[in-house]
Length: 389
Image (cartoon, rainbow, N blue to C red; front, side, top):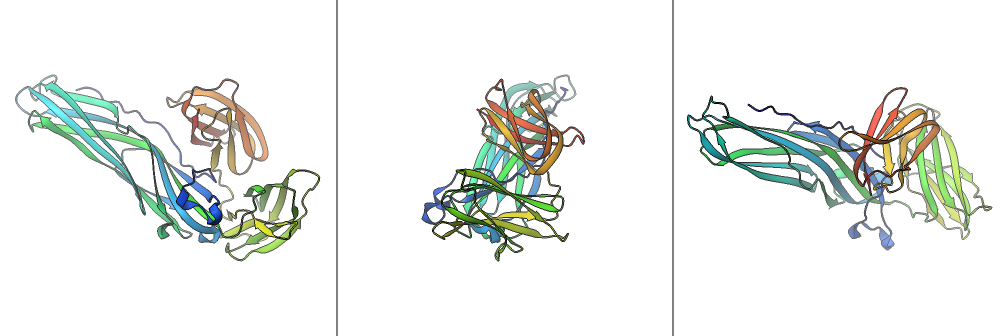
């Protein structure tokens, strides 16, 4: 009997912050304005389990009106098949391997059908040398990137979770050569699924207020934003405990000496507890008309979340690693190819920052890679897929 070797690759669970997503026409907000996107990325570790259910966070209605939901998957799969003649005679067999992997959620379905014919191959009589044959490993997913979408399905609304199920089924049958055989199929599938919410914020967005972020560090929440200063008379920092009723914390005067400015505010959490706090920036123009940033939600019990995002993705001249909260310490960022080889690595000492830029002097060959981020003190690692063009 031939030996069977399985190829697997190690992946991690990552939930990323806000990522750019193509806008569909039916998802546009009033006036033709593009919606705001929130994307979660979950990684399916290499597994032979036939059915798995993943729980994405629901869209919080307090942030605005959900227009569209989009699910995109990048899945790889390998299958090794074995067959053994159980009959008393040497026989020429023709086998058909047929497998289907499915990803489904409310209003969303993605399938990856695969079929392949093996043979004709002569298998000796049962008990003789050559009565067994092994096929593969074969790549059973030939189009690994797929997507599906639905409108603002109510199943995705709330503050809990919404299930997305992955399943694989099928097997091998004989098309010629009789029924006296036994077969086994060993399938390993892994990859990523991205669920994107496209929504319209509850308030009119200010077009010159950019890159607003809110991240927790210890007992503080750090607010950062960038804005064009022309035609702005003031900024008001507002917060809410329910995402609906907002209260002004303080006012910030714009820097009219510069075209663009970066602004920062530290909010102290006076009482520990569960739940969430919502933040937004209100901008008042010279004409006294208001505009607002997107709403940022900070979960009080999630201060140690180290989720990362990689942008731009696809990348050309380099990437930036965005941490879920300010980090300090020594970090290593490695670009790893699909064979597990490190093609480049950068080491850096960080001090209370959320962004780590990585540029390459020698550009890796175009293709699919993983960005591996390691805290060199704790040895904690995170990985995220990146495409280099």
